[in-house]
Length: 353
Image 1 (cartoon, helix red, strand yellow):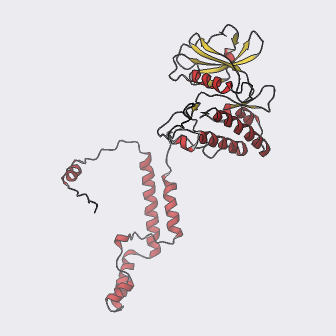
Image 2 (cartoon, rainbow, N blue to C red):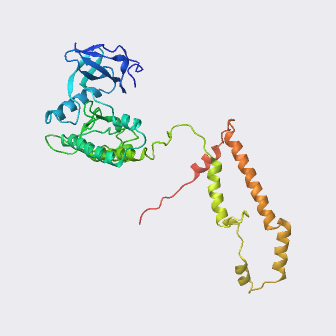
């Protein structure tokens, strides 16, 4: 959500910490309760990135992100893995994180490229990204938001890839006791559905394997240009159902099997010719012949019956289709009698032996 559309007091500070002049009109990205903007460090003349979050934000993600950046950069301060943090604090109604300005994201580079990346490029990307995730995991954190938008190349050296946006980062192990987090379900709301692992999409608490699974999806995406589920429409969107196509699936199978549409269901079948012959001492005579002739005369030939039944089915399909588009109110069914009957029944449960 853009900070301009959040409903908060949207006056973004023009100057941060007395030295960083924010270019508010050139917003780089949106966040849940703020955004990312370019700024100029007036002391050095360098361009930096400013990430802001309104103080009334429901989730205080920026403070947690700053703490993760600080902790994972203490051991290897000059590592080419994450951007350097310049300053964190409060300015006006916002919490502010100042960091190095990086180059375009892998998503930006992919969109500007003519078609999918080459296998060579994807393999070299994989080599660096696995190392980035490995380093984060070595600091006992998981990312939980792996996607092409969260990896940037350097501004000066575009061969270096950096990991960004640790807002959803979380410890997966207690640093003192070395206890791994427990398996939990019903943990929703942390992942992008396009890139998250299968477990995360089912509400299972994320661990290191989920970061690696999301990396795998990225590599396939870079090679193929899309993932199978990226074009799937929102399941909550209102859409019409093509009942005729569904019905035709069963009709085609019926025709492939060579069945005759004679309306003779299993419960309507009569004893076949052989069983009748055996029961009557293999007596097959004029009575049976006359009976069959009378049946054909009454109902017509099989061909005529099939044509009539097919026409009847098509008419029924048209009626169903009309009923599907009928928006008139349907009268409720009075089930009072059924309820009384059901309440009067006593069902005995079988006890295990």
